[in-house]
Amino acid sequence: MKNYVSSIAILLCGLLFVQCTQENISPQAEEIGLETENENHFSGKLYTNNSNIDYSVKAVSELQFMVVLAIDKNTIEATVNYENEGIFIDGHNNNFSETQKEALLNTGRVISEYLLDTKKGEISMAEYTLLALIEYWGKSPSDYVYSKREIKSTSNSNALKSRNEGVTCIRKNTYVNAEYDDSRGNHKDRVKVGSKPRTNYGCMGRCGGDCGRWWIPSAWTKDCMDHDQCSNVNNASGGSGDRNCGDEFNEAADDYVFGVIRGCRG
Image 1: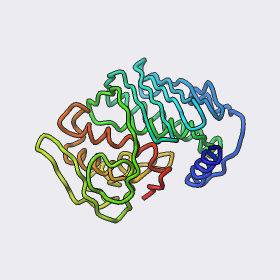
Image 2: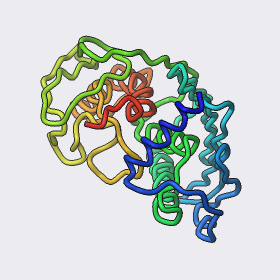
Image 3: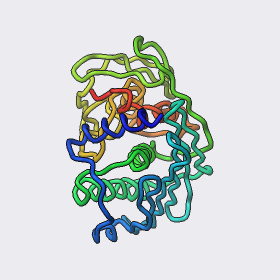
């Protein structure tokens, strides 16, 4: 099992093009409100974009991590298990505003810059898990309600056939059928991976919004393409209980977290 963890750590270091080394907390840690930092626990508090953010990730076991985020005292938490590629999320039925989600994404940005610039890219599995979920939650549809749910990923390496498709890699400059449903019914649109149909919708199929810089490796998957196209067509409207893109967002959770590990790097 330790060999598996080491292999993942080496992969992440290689993808970041930096050297993974051990070092003490630097004075710049104050900029991200860092309170605890070791291989198994990374936590802190900061005020950004007019929101108070509390973040914490702990290793429950060698391949299992607990992430807790509080945005203005509204909590969302998740347990991520890399052994069976499962995620349990409890959002306590919170609904974060666009400003709060911007604060969450900015939290990911400053934490990532700390890890990449100040610490020369040292990143643990715990920190990677935190950053992956920050981006996923920060990119949720408008009016999305964070409920309690469990996601179990599957190995679906071949057919791009139906939703939900587990973690299915796609490659830039190829075409796939983006499948989604909305108020008008079910749809299957032929979309070029990596294309930009309009402003703020570049890098179609990447697990994350547009082509802007993000601070950890991003996955390129079929479920993320489904959500991108649904959001593109519907102007990113609709929550998880809505008729538009909430279900596609739900189906992309495992892609955000496990896609890079699976090798879905475009």
